[in-house]
Amino acid sequence: MAVDEMESGGDDGSVERSRSTRSLVFISHDTRDADLAEALSKLLSSVSAGMLKTFRSSDRKGSQGIDFGAEWYPELMKQLDAACDVVCLLTEQSLGRPWILYEAGVAKGKLDVPVHGLALGVPLSKAGVGPFAQFQNCNNDSDSIMKLVIQLVQRLPDAEPDRDMVRAQVDIFRGQIESILAQRVADTDDDELEYDEASTAKLFEEIKVMFQDLPSRVDGVAERAREPRAVMRLRPGMIHDMAVMAGRGKPNVGIVALVASSSFRDDLPWLYEMGVEVYRQSLTARPAAVARAYRNFMQAAEMAAMGPWSNEIRSKQAMRMLDELPMLLRDFEGLLERTPSEA
Image (cartoon, rainbow, N blue to C red; front, side):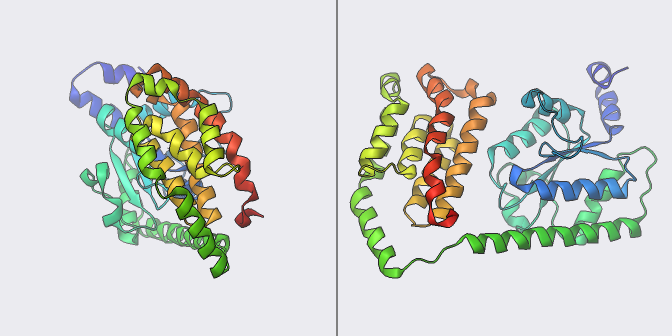
């Protein structure tokens, strides 16, 4: 009998027993943390002699990811439903990311799959906020990770993991994590450029003159966008023209992100906040930070256009805007490639 058939019949006890016999761990993570997810997958495989399987959507080298040509959303839901546990990697990259929260919410709220937060590179107090405040999350010290790993391995029938062997593998895993995070810090430092103080001061003065009253104006536009007629008048072409005029003939990606995201302030507030972050970074005269924020916003817009959030959009005009947003943002991506940090 299939697992789904076992769960659809019988009492709650039979559901729990059928889930306890599973041996698939779903690793929920930000795409930028693919190397951390791979390290955890190897750890679980090593301590279980390959018996404990894992799924991580970012896998491109093995069979743990999504096959090319497959529809990614149904495949993710299928893997979540088949998992015995979900481990969410909580890092500086992933904290507060909508997709991590969505996967954890579906697993715990809809499927009743145990969810574990694993803090890597961030304090446990910082990781255990929002929905993860209700979970007993795992710190990145040896004892905590060892306890989590043994708990996961014991999902296997009659499993009796050797604690000394597990500790040795956990120590190797922690060394890999420290190396990965240290390299990220080094890469970030390399991306930071030092500017001439006089030029920076002059640039800030120009920005203050150009945009000193822009936030209040955009807030007014976002407020009026709640009405169907206001949303109907906002078109990608208009956003392009506004960005060109505000940038004195040269489009400004901060203005593009801010104006474009205002359409979703009520329906998709997380997408709106990411657009506002691009604008904030554009005021700092740090092209590398602007590029990172803009590409994060662009990826989130593409995910929103493809994912299940269309059900949250109340206006057909706003939905049309969401469909056109990824292409609009791609049109302006070329401006980022000419920033000093990427020259």
